[in-house]
Length: 206
Image 1 (cartoon, rainbow, N blue to C red):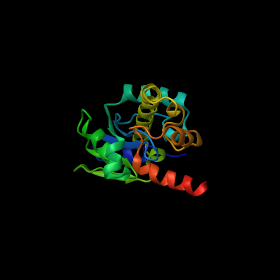
Image 2 (cartoon, one colour):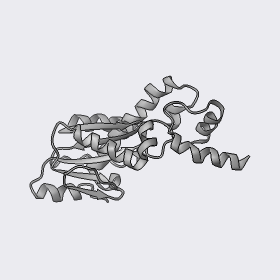
Image 3 (cartoon, helix red, strand yellow):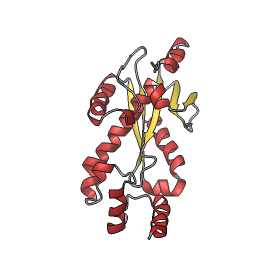
Image 4 (cartoon, one colour):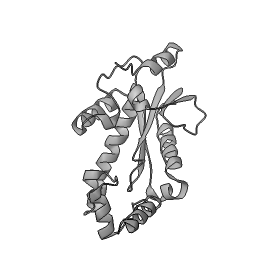
């Protein structure tokens, strides 16, 4: 049984109360923004079902998303679009989205727990590999980021660019998505830097 409050408990024991979990989603997509979230949960709060957003069903994520926003002391989302991703690369864009999310919090965090990354701020922080599975705060941030991005895919981007299946594959490089790209060409929200390799591979295949 994973103790998802191990990192938080050690910091609470030092008297810190504003601990923000930070995570991003959409790093591997061909389309759309990379979205990050930062969440500060109350000291001692236990959310039994919270886990890495990829490990839980959409229905459960939606329910936990509502619970997290209700319980959180503060939460915030950062988004970086495809043109910036193409300009500065996906890793730097992910870090920028994380920075935006932290800066958007209504409460100044005393400490950051970050999923396998560093945030470019003068705030004490720990990068945790597989943090979305090991820290409740990071898992909560991963759920907020994932639900935010999935809803953008289903409710905004799908209607802007029908025919690509964005609501279903969420911008990942599925067969349906690749075939739609071949047929319709890229939209303004596609990441050009991600498509170069994709079409080079396809040319080799034919």
